Image (tube, rainbow over all chains, first blue to last red; front, side, top):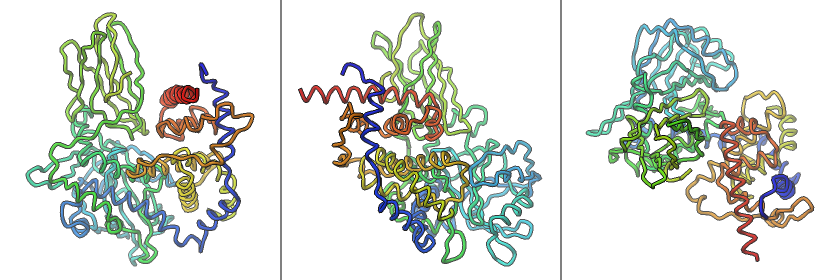
Length: 396
Length: 162
């Protein structure tokens, strides 16, 4: 075969895969499992995935392993996000989307009257409703943090979906994230790290049961140049394996749009995040093993996925790299000239550093609203100079 | 989701979900597990779908994600794939390149997914981009890279036989 024929490839593949047909018995079995006793048993299955992710979210944010585990998590799991109450902003906008999809609503006009911290488990009142902060999380893959709140009426009954929407529209205007910098403080003793987050005017809601999940996006503590402190996104990258395990769960959770707080039928209330934690021993185990106290210089293993698109103009090479956020981590970027000399760019928390005096980096880095991340880098080249590009060990 | 509607969807899309799960997991047993999980999620999700195409897209996306999660599991990555006999031995007039499935399954997961959606499901690059949450450009790149690798694999296989 000199060249693979596209049509031949398609026909062959379809010819083989077309043979993969499930029996009626197999389909019936799935239908039966799903609908058995009106779904009893199934939520456990789903809940497993949700809870893994939710536990991971918690774990990622707090480094819960640091000692005390669940009890610590329950009592001291801190959101430590600057959070405002009594804002004049109407959050009706936030809830305009009645489905469960994540959506973004600008809160450009936020006016903050009061700022305070909210802790997991804390209760407060908004209108006639009691609101409980169920916890928080942070998804380093999507650069988003989550704040979970459950709503209860004055008699202690969970607010149902319709009521929740109405309640939220009426009262949630009292509560909105501030636009100021939000910080997570992770107690690492002498190695205490201050992780700074910035609410960028996007807010998302996910509803489930009587819970609302607000998400905030992290951009930068500086505000002007997100690349400047982007690197600390890896704050809980304990090692590659651990991170992947955690992030896989998060990703699965988000991808299936099931990021929500599950309903605990036994307790007749939403499952709390720390409850979810309790049934995730392996997450605790992982984090115990990689106690962040021991981690000083945290870095992720490089992953590079896509071929860069190269655009060469006179004396200048523009490199544009498109990544899925799953493949976000870039460790190094190398330009290699014909004569074999190379210039290595190392990505770190502060900036792209250039090793080599002939070249400079003019690139920037943006976080799009969707899940596609775009990195644009510019390099000044000598005229007619040719380079190959190596990204994290892969040459293009 | 309404039970009758759920039954209809299972019967309509079960094979598609299982195929994409198989491509993701490279293992029929895991593919069946993933397929079951996907339909469980469908059963309980409160999302409203406008059309069957919308449902199918969602199912495939969830199946891909579930497969990825499974495959990323540290001990799964050590397991070699084995084609089921009823699949690996399929020969009919359409199958001019019998090694093609093996070649596709040897690709990286992200490339396998794109190839499957493109060549089997016959989605456009734009549709694939939407399902996978990547750019169209990325889809094209993955397709091109995957084609090259498939070609190389098949050639190598042929050389070995000689």
